[in-house]
Amino acid sequence: MSNDNESFEKIAFVPGFGTSAEQHSYSYMVDKLLSTKNYFRLRQIDFDGTFEYSTVVEVDGITPSEFYLAQNHPNPFNPSTSIQFSLPVDASVTLSLFNMLGEEVAEITNRDFSAGVHTINFNAEGLSSGTYVYFIEVQGNNVTFTQTKKMLLLK
Image (spheres, rainbow, N blue to C red):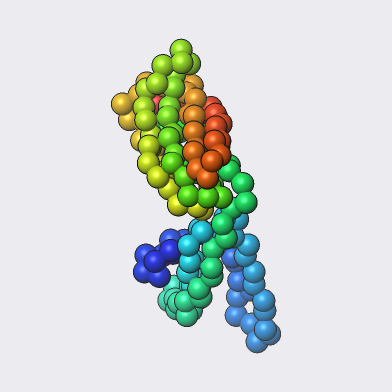
């Protein structure tokens, strides 16, 4: 999958039927499309390790219908994790990290985002092991959305 038709990343592996004279169908469902255009290609690998890429297929993304903050992944983590959120409208997003005493220990992001699904990679290298709370505040289209989730840093 790619959002620029150049730098593809592996998203899944679907095992094949091996050498066969029969026609076979394969399928894979993508959980979350980017709200921009998405590009896909298949890599077919032979038993001897050689491979071929299919032609690129372009798929229009879907704008989410609601605000959403996902659980960070992986969790527990060391030292980096990803936080995903979705925006149905263009909005200003502040994502902050707090320790269990309620002290803000990091501002993960504070900027404008377009409508769609976004992933922020967070590196907690300078923080100590423990439980933290991340808080998102979104302001867009006369709507405010806030939510918190816990994350666990294990070193």
